[in-house]
Length: 359
Ligand SMILES: NC(=O)c1ccc[n+]([C@@H]2O[C@H](COP(=O)([O-])OP(=O)(O)OC[C@H]3O[C@@H](n4cnc5c(N)ncnc54)[C@H](O)[C@@H]3O)[C@@H](O)[C@H]2O)c1
Ligand SMILES: [Zn+2]
Ligand SMILES: [Zn+2]
Image (cartoon, rainbow, N blue to C red; front, side):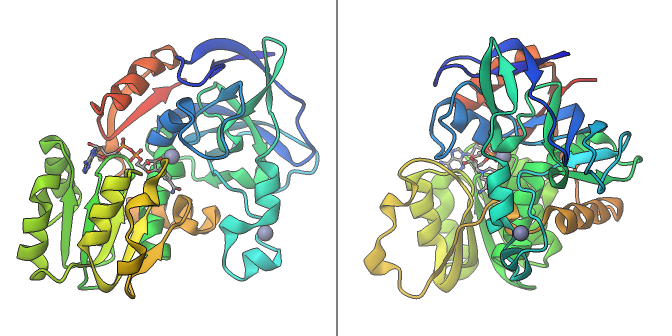
């Protein structure tokens, strides 16, 4: 059986819509028919080889998706055919010493599962980004990467939880542990940064400054809970006005560029926490090591939690009306329109999150 997939054969080139065939299912794997995929900046980074560890070709990008389990290997017990699932980028075992010491993203079993081609395209073994490859109608993943959710959670908004929401909120809740009454600055308010803003609101931050180049993003950030907004040029004044010049308790860089990592560093107070979520080449080059002082620096991945507990918590916050998922969706497209959106993202002209619909 073949499925349609958007395949990257060569770095920097457009994706090509191809017929793909899934390699045989392992005993503990499931096949998921995707309903939706999000498009994240990291997909663009894979296309242009700006992300370490993803230069194997051909590759199907996409790592934020939700759908329905349509086939399960004989050893699968966590999910069943018919279950609605959100795909997780890491599938920590939850049992090994690394998981049990509270570092699921470092689980050696999860890491091993991601490093195998999953598809065949034009006769070539083809990789999938983070072991998911959601720019395709189906994904074959280990059962631990398919997190069951209740049937009444709409799959379009659920899908965003898999990267943008869990990364932004996990950075706030797990990695930086934003405290009640603290001050927060978020540089880059796209699909991930907007979730840092709303999680900081949920965590009880007193001041939340959203920084972006687009006025529309700043307006949206206010809807998601920012108390203040600024363009990059206005940032130094905002640091003075909001923190008296001391800097913010928590700063988040959500772009992955040397100049914005530096700006976030400068916006962090002494003994404060800088969390660099963005991924990109040369990112840390402008951090002046001799001026690090006692600032704390954090770099996590996908929010650094266990997807089972994280996804469940996020859905409960959404049910309680405290986490806005619907408001993150800017546009819905078909798979064959994916290059237009990636090109727009590369040009910087991009909304919060675009969804690919397979329905
Ligand atoms: N660590 C992780 O696990 C993880 C997970 C997902 C994404 N990421 C990374 O996070 C970053 C953000 O991803 P995204 O999908 O939200 O991207 P995005 O393109 O949706 O958002 C980037 C935002 O930055 C804004 N921007 C551009 N130039 C700016 C400037 N000079 N100052 C302030 N804002 C500016 C853009 O207008 C946009 O709103 C990317 O680097 C991505 O690879 C990391
Ligand atoms: Zn992502
Ligand atoms: Zn483990």
